[in-house]
Length: 141
Image (cartoon, rainbow, N blue to C red; front, side, top):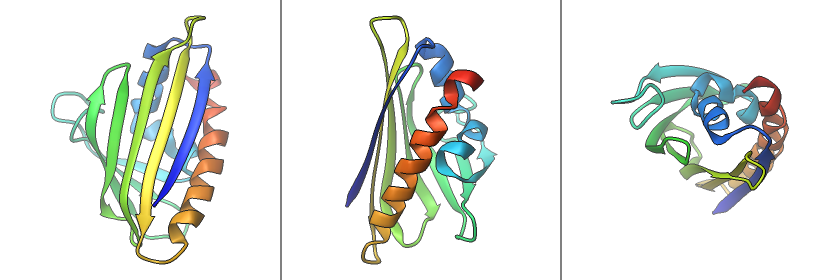
């Protein structure tokens, strides 16, 4: 199992950062992927049950489903289709206020693989892309 752990502070308030990062279509730069919304959530557009399709270069597409969403606090998702050879993939975004009125994001992804070292390669790529993509949030949110 591998863990991606990215910490990022924003000067923007939690509601703006959460709104931006909960919107599936805004996540392309974070994952280095083309993202397509497949399904809205049961009670909220980006809430529990919402599904997105990710296509990263020549790799097979995969789907991620939101399994827990607490507005302005938490987003938890899992790969629910595709992703081979990646297994047990779960991402968690935790949003907390900073003393200055901004937002701290604690973003953790855990994943394994059925192919030796594939999870390590994915971890390295995700870490690089997420850090780069989060730097754009201030300007876009």
